[in-house]
Every structure is written in structure tokens, then in C-alpha cells.
Length: 250
Image 1 (tube, one colour):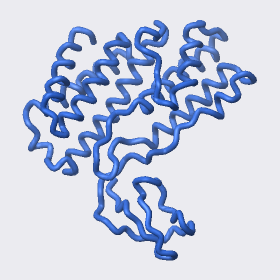
Image 2: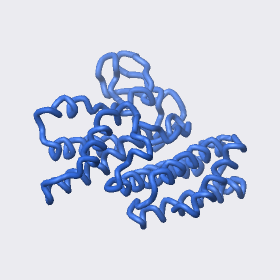
Image 3: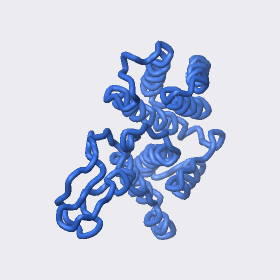
């Protein structure tokens, strides 16, 4: 959405940035009455906090299934409010978002396994607990640590994250925040953007069933594409190369 991010309270005169606080409440007096003092700018990222501490603190007294339910809900709420355009600037596909969306998918599998089977592979449980420990710090286990039973969760998480990121990239371009319309993109830029979308569709059709290393390379290609659209021609070439190499992996 396009908003006027720089605000001035009409009650007390306090000025603040919605881009930083994500709130229309005046930080000075709490009033909801304010006016924008800048031009309307595309903004999709609320920059909400992501804290799993309350869930981790109950780890000794709560079943793994209940922990998974709570983690899944917390991740879903965080992901729902996140975006990648901040005050008209395209942000990176960040590690915290990736960790949160992977934990959501892993927690969903863990919760379902325990609900219907009452048992869980030890490797899957340890991987879930590892994500629960570090996801809100933006850390995920490496690709070679993903157990076979959760590889699809990692692949699907990456595909869904990139789908959302690509949607914001298109918004950023269409709204002219990049300084160009989509029609003004170079042929190579359009090809990479379209190729990325095809990879996402393919992974989703496979229900995420790809090698974790391939999923990680797709993330790297996405980040290179974003740098390329921001003017880095070398990064754009790297994105194209990564996607072409992935054709044999996905």
C-alpha cells in the first residue's frame, strides 16, 4: 500500500515515522489524529518483532506437539505482517523471514505427525527444536543438516518465501519505486524474473521435494536478482547463471 510515512500529531505536534514504528498512534500522547508530511510511498513491511522466547521458556514443561502448534501460530502471524518494501525501498529477502517460514512448515509437519501417529523421528524433532532455538535470530541449520523427512518442508518454505518476495518486487517495479516501469526493464532482467517464477511454480508442484542445497541456491539467485534490479549488472548475471544451473537440480 502507499502511505504517508512521516506523520505529525495534530494533538501535541509530535513527529514520527510510520516506517519505523509501524503504528499510527502518536508516540508522544497516544492520539490517533495525525497528518502525513511527505508524499505517499509504497510500504509493505511492518517490521514486526519476532520473538520465540515465550515458547522456548516452556520447553521443559510442554509436549513437542504443543510447542509445534504454538510455534506454527507465532510464525504465521509474523509472516502475515511482513513484506519487503520499506518506504519505497526494496529490502532483501532476509534470513529471519526465511527461518520463520521454514519453522512454520516444519512445525506443521511435527504437529500433524504427533497428532496422528503419536511418534516422531528423533532427527525431525531435533531439527524442529534447533529451528525453535535460533529462528528469531535469523539462523537456520545448514542444508546438510536437514533430515530426509523435512527436506520437503525446507523446499516448500523457500518456494513460498520467494513467491511473496517476487510479488513485492513486481509491486516495486509497477509502482515506479525503482525509477522504471516493468516495460522499461531490460530483456535480461525480465527473463531472470520470469525464470525465478517458473522455478517457484515447479517446486510448489513438487510439494517442496527438492534437495536443500538447491533451495539455498534459489535463495542466492533471488538475492542476486534484487541486487541486479537495483543496478548491479554483475549480480544480475550471477542470478541468471544460478537459475540456469538449477534447471538440472529441480
